[in-house]
Length: 115
Length: 115
Image 1 (cartoon, chains in turn cyan, green):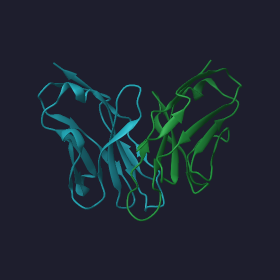
Image 2 (tube, rainbow over the protein chains, first blue to last red):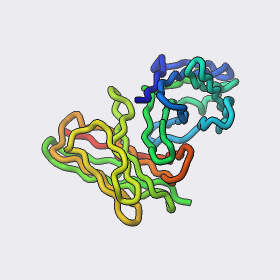
Image 3 (cartoon, one colour):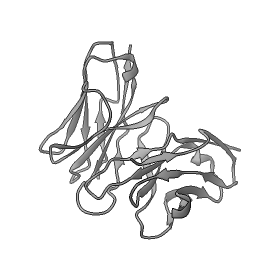
Image 4 (cartoon, rainbow over the protein chains, first blue to last red):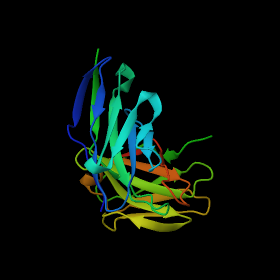
C-alpha cells in the first residue's frame, strides 16, 4: 500500500528565504504524486502534480517539486518565501490507474513565514 | 465555474446522534471522494463514489456510509456519533475516468463537533 512521510510538522522560514518541504513516498507501482496547500478554514488546493511526464514539476505560486525515483522523494521548493505562503502543505501519493482516486496523505507541514 | 460545495459548513451534534453531510461536485465530475481530517490522524480516506457506485472504501467502521445520486451529488452519513468523530470532513470531486492521474478538487469542508 502507498504511504507518504513528511518530517517536521512545523517549518519556520524567513521571508525571502528558500522554502524546502521534504516528502518521501512508498509505492508498489509507479506513483502519481501531488502537493496540496491548505489555508485556514479552507479545503485543499492543488499546488502541483507528478504524472511521469517530467521529473521537475512546476506549480502555482512559484512552487516546484522534483521527482527522484532512486530516493523515492518528491520534495517541494520555492526560492523565496512570501508572507502569503504561510499555510499547511500536504504531500500525497496515488497508485491510481485512472480508476482509483484514493490518495494517501502525509501528516503535513505547517509553514510559518517570519518577517 | 462553480467549485465543490459542501453543506453544512459547521455543525454541532451530541454523542449517539447521526449526521448527514452533503457534497455537490464540479459540473461534469463523476467521482466524489470523502476524507476525514483530524489533528491526530491527519487526512484519511473514507470512500469514493463513481457513477453512483462505491468504488473504494477506507478503513472506517460501518457507522460511516455514503451514497451518490444520478446527478453526481453525494452524501455521507455517520450514525451513532462518538466524540472521536469530531473532524473536518472534506469532499473532493474529479472527472473520475480514463487513464492517468485524476486531480481532486476539494471543497471547503464540513466541520463536525460532537459533544
